[in-house]
Image 1 (cartoon, one colour):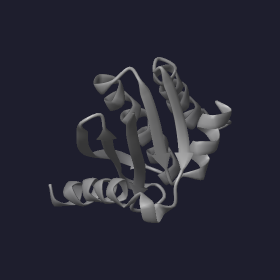
Image 2: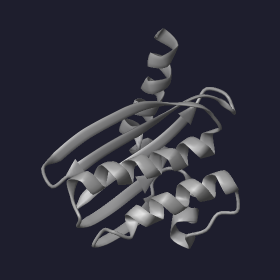
Image 3: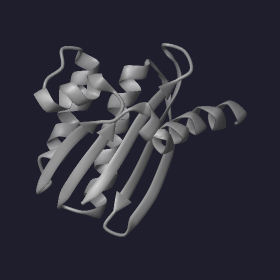
Length: 131
């Protein structure tokens, strides 16, 4: 089973944003830190969901457990629905990928247990400020 920890961060709302993804399991220990552009925090959370699933798809067709501290993302993924059109586009793409796995589910976790993904998301913002 792959565990995919995801997080989005924004320095402002909207503001410079980054996504962090930490994937472990099945012999993998991968970290992704990417600048996302100027977005609000919820959008970056959905972007992190999509990127995390894209990366997981490259690693395994099996069981994927997504871990997020975003209640909005977790609820939308579980209900397979969100009203906001920007989030909906990202969610629909994420669900399309999720449906290709043998089994894919999401679990809400507290921020305190999502520190690696959070640090990666914040690092992406900081690196963009330096460049």
